[in-house]
Image 1 (cartoon, rainbow, N blue to C red):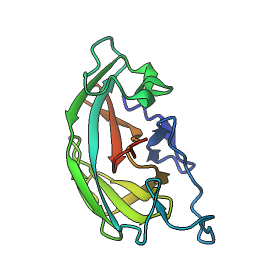
Image 2: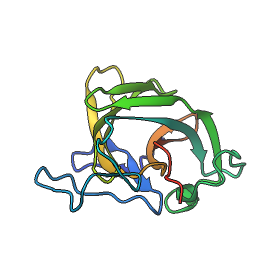
Image 3: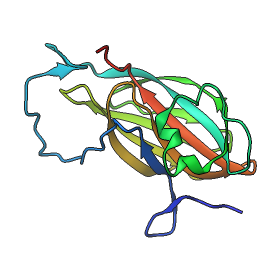
Image 4: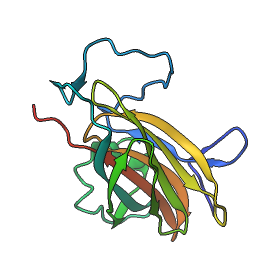
Length: 180
């Protein structure tokens, strides 16, 4: 039985985004202006970069009792609702990605779908404005799922696709958290 966590008004499956506690979702407005000079990862810079490296975490989560992969145990967002309802989590894949503004990158998922990530911009404050989509089975087009603004190093998660008796959870982490 397919049990998506969220449905769009049209009934199509949308992924649920749960953001790590420090991750802020910022409204995407064309008229938004930065309130200070160019800052990247807490440091003033002359040029804001147009690319970032990161990773995608492909997780099989289940409500059945079991183990949580040691690589996932320290991720706070996975211990918060709705993810705390999963009692087992297995890390299936952890591909690295390199995103450049305006150049979408595809990541194959184990259920036959394709995750598409597109870096829209890097804000003057050093946050990553990203569009995340997953294609429909047997289709070439992509369903836009999320547009978010993520700080460096903090993962955000999508969930909802049924796979192997559990739920696929996709985590995306871009850049490195700045040293404090």
